[in-house]
Picture 1 (cartoon, rainbow over the protein chains, first blue to last red):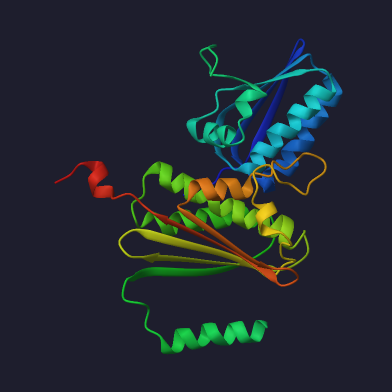
Picture 2 (picture 1 turned 90 degrees about the horizontal axis):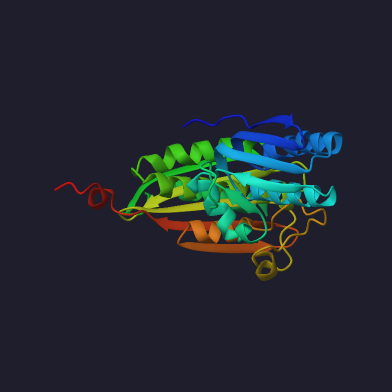
Length: 113
Length: 169
């Protein structure tokens, strides 16, 4: 039973911040990821931010809190946050909170979720 | 109070054979530190795996355990020291019962705490969806709390019949 360390790889491409999350996102890892992502938000103040969730292997409601918290951060800085390619497991958690109503969620093929 | 509970457990272990339909049982105690969220999930997953669950069932239960343990760390003990007591039991054919107990501060209003999006966190960093996840990912959820003494979360789920799903004769 594998448990993988959560990681955020953050790359700036012009006006877009690409945040790639991988591993297990729970309350334990969310604390650290929050600091890393917010640091990049304040440093670059991007117009758009894309959070790639395709590599997230586990996520509970703390991960949901991390995403919703970053949505408020993005809104506060006038930037638009999009979620990219959540797995069916991650989508199940997002759906419980009805996240699709207030965050854009795209699958990797470019079509809307 | 602690002494009385320990005595009860000891007596039960000494005197009692497990109930007839009890297939297996596990108890673990972990300090309320956040690294143990992942450890509790992993241990729970190994225990549940003996029932040959579907991927979905296993993932749901791992998530439910993670929520209960996180609540104990974040809310019950509020980052003070304490232990989390997890009991997992398999009974009947494929029913799994998970208890997550703490001796933390307790919940004043359980009904309010169980409402979706209810959170005591003013910064908006918590989703308030912990109990909603537990409720949706198991068949039954019971929360008993005594303010100042602690909380017990019980989750019960009957797994689908693996033989039927696999379609084997």
